[in-house]
Image 1: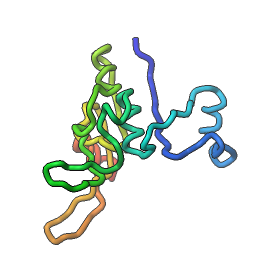
Image 2: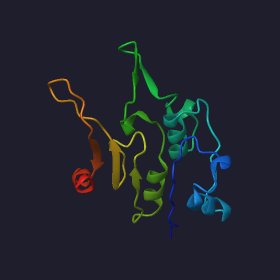
Image 3: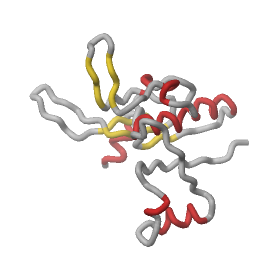
Length: 150
């Protein structure tokens, strides 16, 4: 039987920042239910999240920053969101392999798009033909974003 696991990713939060303004997080840390994660280099959101999800370093999973160098186009592309960019086995794939009833919700992490999880939501702007950029989101299942926005 697997134990439930909740990962709350608070980029840049340090132990020193816990205090009166963060009573619930402070309690979790004090009781041992919350533990800080060591960092990776480069210590940016995409690299750190990919390392946490795969248990490997950026040299293995490929997320070496918040941008990707596209060798075919010879340009850096920022803020790509496809889960297919991250190489290596994800923690939720390992969980599903061990227990067929294992379920995962990955909420508001980077590289959520097309992740092999049961529920996910991530900001994803839409770009109408007239050039505007509108706030929107991506979700799995697709109707989840509409339910949340209601």
